[in-house]
Length: 484
Image 1 (cartoon, one colour):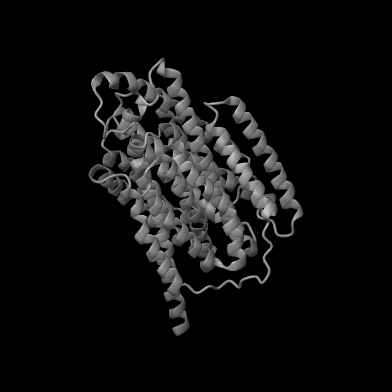
Image 2: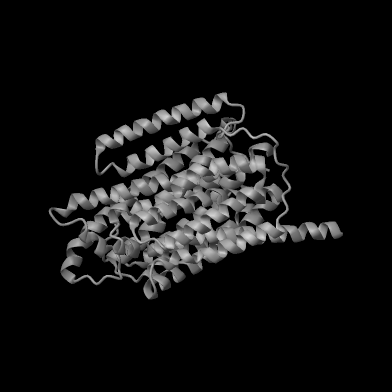
């Protein structure tokens, strides 16, 4: 009885740390996206706006499989602690940033920490809970995400409207300190560390070159097509060398044996593309509302809240759905509903009621809560225990990579379409128009509103293409049975 009580008490402390960590990393998204228009305007960073998010996500993507491998070898605790330290320091430096370039560098440091925190929260849950209990625990942990969605836009908007955007980064500093203290004093490592660890340095090198070249290539599309083609070629070559490297080493950074199961591979693809869609509305819905409707930052940020609340509610339904229906059928139905709601964005004009954005975000969040939870659970369930950390890291890498690449693509599409419509007007003039905190006279509103609106239509045209790819991919899933 005493042993059972101690085990439960340890689980409670672990879940407290995971809950706070989930809140910290998720509130980072909701607060920053709310403040993004103000950051762009003050730092004159419209041309670099996608890098504010994509640099953070890029370093997260590169380090995620590395941390996953280290967590399987060194244990979860020390790797988690390192991630918390880096994330907290990056948050502090982001808030202190005096320029767009220093902010981008600080965000890169934040990403180095997030690469550890995000996958390890799921790995630790999988370590201490069975597949049957995991849906309930993930749903509980998602309440942290829902809470951050409620507080993030409100707090972010309040800080932007009353203080400055710098403060949206400072809120993570005390949370990071608290998480570190809880993990240090309350979490007892259960995984025996390996005495010998073979780090796949060549794999790390080729993965890094692949992702960096790909991201910069996307950023260069509307500046120099030639540079983009060269960078895409470098990325493709590096990816080929990565696969070659991983197949010949005994302890690969990315164990490709996991992808033998087509259902596992489809979960990774689905999660990757849905995460790309997720970051699209998180960034561009507030921009749409502030620039076209001149909605205050606080109100525009609530569009993300409606999505997150529905995500939270939907996650509690996952366990019951998986007991009754096959993952394939669940995903096809849910994604189809999301797709239909997003099609309307291609036809919305400036006179359309802006509450529609909150409805679309709610539908999207509800679908994300179901599908991405299924992606995580199945990816963990379909691999052996020894690959649990790596499998979780891969699904997390896919989510991060989807966001990273799509931020770059969305940013390139937005900038390209804006430049095509300027006809002699200064691109820098659009910076002031983007944020609703800046006063814009009616004449400039009439000039810039159609330019930005058409560009946003193009961005969400790309989003709808992603939905089509997701549906086709899941139709190819051979598994049609309920997974026990």
